[in-house]
Length: 516
Image (cartoon, rainbow, N blue to C red):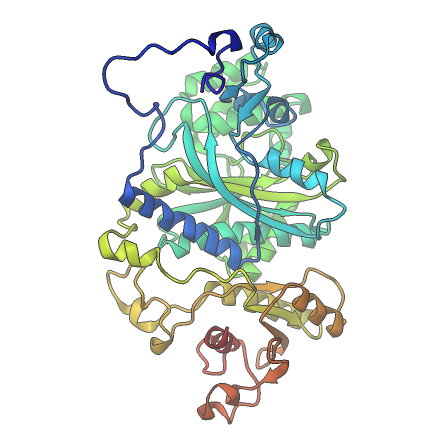
């Protein structure tokens, strides 16, 4: 106990004095009683279910790391918020801490450095791409306030080792951003409740350069831009002046940096001047995120390891619900090979406040029922394969997204005061289809035999082979046979093939949901 408190070994044999008065929880922490635990579990189960449905595998890491790990690339902001730890059992260790002010260990303030270390240590053995998620406690020594505590839960989603092409990078970024947006939708949030904003550090750098900011000033100016919402304009002007820059830039930092462009067909033309984000715009449109995401240059993210695309989900009147971006150089810094990577973190504090304000957390029997529901299947329900050309690639891509999202029942959708936890949301008796764990290949091969082998290797229950919108072949791996709509019901015997229309009785997702 004494060692955990960091007391020198020579003091460990003496009893601590008994304090007077009542004990209280440390500032910035929470005591969770049974109902509180259920409310938190409601969130963490949603995190886990959405992660699994999008094909991410769960990992875990230690709750403390060597302090040097965070010095590699996290930035001064994180280093200033570390809860540091040492055993106190060694006089040399105690003296080292006294001299340097830095303990050998720190409670983790974020997960990305741990993930980079883990991936780097086994990079040659791991699959490519590598899709990981984790959720657990994190710690930051900062001033507690609304939306910010010293101990909190955080959900992390990371997509590592995409193929490095413009299309591959955009696909990975769109998938990661799609997970965050889908989590919000799953919990009942709508586009009126939050804004999904994307930017690119390269585009921000170009904008700054045009206004006289030199490359060596980019990083401190981006740090200032990231903090601008929390600072008075006078402070921003002062800091810009200290950097030798025009204080008038502060008005952009406070009012927002133009332009803000919505992800839609017309937006592709408008965003063309920012060539770095055009592939991502196109991919987001193809995946159905039209009108949900917007390009905003004022989003930069403060962590020093971001290298390209960055994004945040922001709720009105709150801090960011989540934030993340691309960190292509970090794995290499930890001894791994050059590895493209993109990911985000979402904390439970701001999300809980937002859901409470919107009356989107159940209570009583509804809460107990919600946390008792069927979880997402760790074993993939279906593996989607494009059988033919580029046209079917896009059809298959759209199908994967629809399978992961599910189909909400007409009864639930027509209810004026509907809630996301209500049991008839995906009721098949009312036309609903539950969300599925759907995977697809990231390989370039069109060899069907190899793709089916890949599906089996990933332990999928079914393979949906897309030949066109009205022709989807469904293979049942466990039964070792192809299925037809007639196998599900004699009423569907007139249908020769499955299709990708969620409104149709022959929709392949309806078949998989019924059988998986």
